[in-house]
Image 1: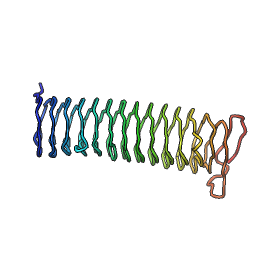
Image 2: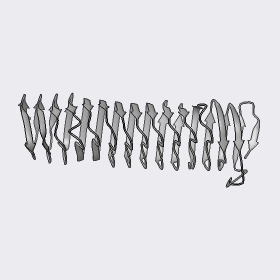
Image 3: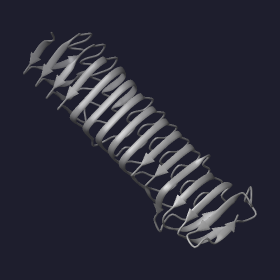
Image 4: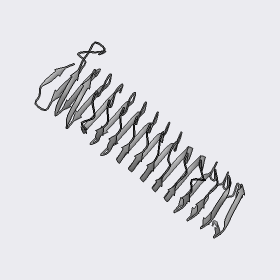
Length: 288
């Protein structure tokens, strides 16, 4: 049985330091630092956080219908088994070094530098705005229902599955490994550079110079917008694209099947001029 603390407020330094197995209901944390540091088994319901670093070094915390104001920056770091449901986060740098993170119906309005170096994450119906560099170095990420506005997302992430997402993100998926994206919209230039084993299924892609320097890129039933020029430079790939491609430049090996191509650029810098087969829907084959 958890001890219940209800309709209270706390302020200052470490007011509930190292507390175990408590339930907070309608509690406000005014300015101060590390309100719940080194705690275990915390439940927070309809609480408001206005101080910095409230949940550092926590284990088994459940946070529901809460508000993290802009003043609660860097709120949850170095923790294990954190669940957050129906919560609004206005603070940046929200999660770092978390093992076991579950988010459901969460809105992050200032998500810059959030979810760095986190492992074993599951997100359901999450929105993130201003999320530059979100998910950097993340490992084992499972996402379904996600909107992101923020650049440089998922940099160096590994073992990621994304479904039903819209990413407005320049330089997304740089140097990632083992990422699969289903039924999603990916908007932003320089998508997926230097990635390994990136797989895109039923995705719509926009932005200049997408998917260059990729190793083992797979595309299934994807479409590419009119600004997707100079695609696939120095990539090894198996691509089935159900649209026109504006231009393809110096792919390395594999094949590209598409409806039509505006321009195929094979110049003196191509590393393997005969390595990639390009075929349109009319079955006109181009050996690059």
